[in-house]
Length: 543
Ligand SMILES: [Ca+2]
Ligand SMILES: [Ca+2]
Image: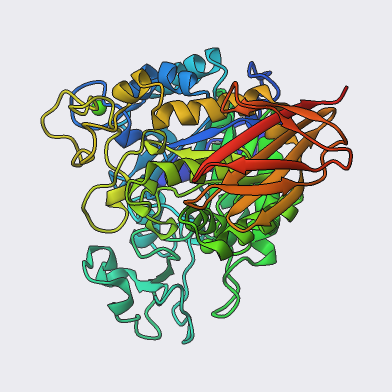
């Protein structure tokens, strides 16, 4: 940025700031070299809800210092990246997606100094931190939106989307997405779809993809894009390792029919990706439910969650033959940039795995193996690795209970945690599971270590995928290393013939370690008998 331009923007920022407490100061790029290993972003990530992870000060609410205290645990598990759900200041006091300040830490979570300490300590352990950034909308309490409401002539007005007569035909997931600010719709407690649309001609009619409490930004306004770019740099300059960009297909709407995944939204997403990747060794993953595979492309977001695959992997673990085939087929074409997961913090992706599989640990392990040993970047949801059960509650609440650290809970010293503890914490908690060599935790840990020690499992091509009855087998190939994986989803032993191995090859058992080697015949075939509900992994180095 040249000096006169920067000066103009500083003056403009000062004028704007005077009207609302929003920090719009330009943030020039100050990239520092990353201290993380170059391959950190090809490891396994964990999605963490800071509010539910570890409370450090006894107020019943998880915080950044608490998370920092748990980094040793995460390092032991073997994850190399964390995705933190929003940690910026928010109005919702829960999930955090209703942002009130894009350049401040949520006060309940701590301070900027706590953030800096978290990043520093994570980096020491080879762990990168990626945080949620909400581009599409703010909280209705965001001071800029409040200033725009108070004064139709305010320069903040054009930061949001207004239309006194948006017309009929709008339908976003069953809701009419326009709201009359004068009737304070954010205080409405019923179903949003039952809220009457504003009368035509109502001047303060604004747009909110996700509801009136989160008004959409006007991302056609260059000042808004600039603000987000500066805010993204604000955290990158402090050493943040990347972003999970929220709801990117919803950035820009054109009309009642063309509102989802518009070309303008794709262009902006790429622009944000480019900015983030202009810093060394950074990672970007997008939430794009409309066309997940398109967003995994480096020409768009460069990483995207593999929505829909999650349902099939859980169904496959339940023995659904059609789902096993779909999972095997998905990986024929899946780009390694896709981010795989079994479920996340949103209820539309399903209950906690424990609940979906009714506590069947044998099938739970197969579900875990199906994404921890395959192409893509796996995202474990906090507590998944110990088989944490969900709680009772409405909406997403059952998914976002405090992490179970000990039989008693271990999340907080307060007798009033922000949300009830998980009902199965006595048996399924981190402390007990770490001590038990046969636990789910140690299964996750073993597979993550395997992925780290066999580059073909982290980065290799997917080859020789085949489904024989309940058995799915495939190979992963990277350079001279080849891994062979077979999963028997059936509750009976199964014998299959694997094809496509190097002739007369001998593959060492990698999981379970110390098992019988796999021997290929002269045609590259190998007979393998699998126990019920089991996993076998072999490793073969070219001679
Ligand atoms: Ca706390
Ligand atoms: Ca939008």
